[in-house]
Image (cartoon, rainbow, N blue to C red; front, side):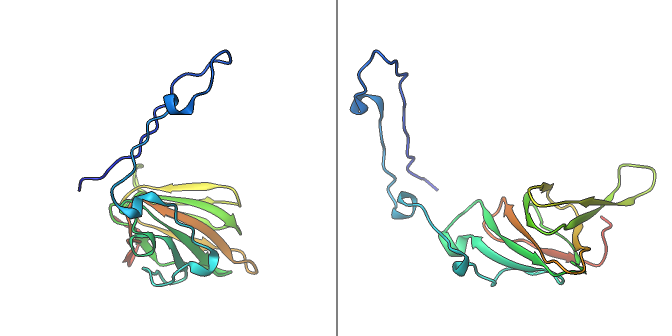
Length: 169
C-alpha cells in the first residue's frame, strides 16, 4: 500500500540566527484524508464489540473499525473483584499493558526450567506488563472489593484473543 508521508525536516537553529520557518521546514501533506487528522476517542466512545475472555470485559478505543488503524489496537480491560480470566494468548500480537487501578496479577507458564511452573506477576497502578506473541497467560484480580482496570495496546489493528483450556504451550 503506497502511503504519502508527512515529513518535517528541521535545520539546526542558533540563537544568533533569524528563525525563518519557511527555510526550516519542508512539509508534504498525505494524499488521503484519514492521515490528515488526529482521532479523539472519549470514554463514551469505547466499544465493547471486541474479542472477549471470560472473567474480563474489554472495550476497544483504537482499532481498524474505530479509527482505521492498521498496526495498532488499544483499549481498556476491566477485571471484576475476586475474578480470573480464562487462559488465553493474543496470536502474533505483542501486547503492552498499563495498570490504571487495582492490583491485578498476570500468570504464565515458565517453561525455561527443568519443570514448567506457573509464575505470578503482581502489579499496582503505574506498572507496565509486556506479553510476547503467542504466550499463554491469564489475568487475575485477587482483591475481593476493587475492580482492576488496565489499558492494553497490541501490535495489530484488532483484538486477537485465543482462549485456551490451560496455560501449557
